[in-house]
Length: 291
Ligand SMILES: [Zn+2]
Ligand SMILES: [Zn+2]
Image (cartoon, rainbow, N blue to C red; front, side, top):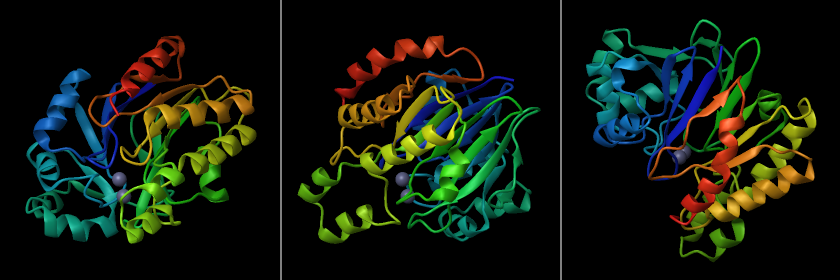
């Protein structure tokens, strides 16, 4: 019944995560080139022959590449994405037509569950972002749940409800607004990132985590994974410190891990003891110096 999650890569240079439910392995996003994705999979003792499907959040180029999508065709791995993603995939990836002909294009609809394994379902939920139709995913078994939400500009009550009572929450902590405003980025880009269809700031993410804690059973949340941390306008240290302060305000002892661009995270176990994860905290502080 247990599930595991590892973040293979997170950030504007590429995003991918590997989920394992009842031994069935699924990828979330394909934002690395095949060679690099293979290398990251090997680091967590996985390979393409084990992948049962790929779930795609949205069509921005840090979440898929034409060659990695082609890899789904050559490996005969079904791609689960929204219908609105298909137009971009058809233009960008010559093999996508084969995926469609081979019935490996499996369009999903928001809120309609996808069967992941014997005990686990995945429910895609829509988030606000300027990448067209964009989704987060809530994975649920009769006993447990975890959620993944990267690339969102804001949150509302509907999104909050999708994140209640999860044991693990992987959530975007993209930027520190002051660092963003002081950066050398052009005003249009700053405004885009700060906007409701852009990316979630540390403070916005913390507010959401606070509400999740308020609405969830006591001590239900055990692991918070910070995603899509901006290298220029944030740091793993700052994002993690902000997250820990927010958790402490609500009396939560959940672990915090800042996912990296260059290295896979450890496996996070859901539905079993989190004792292993408790040793992660000092490691994340060491790794934070890489940003
Ligand atoms: Zn995006
Ligand atoms: Zn992104």
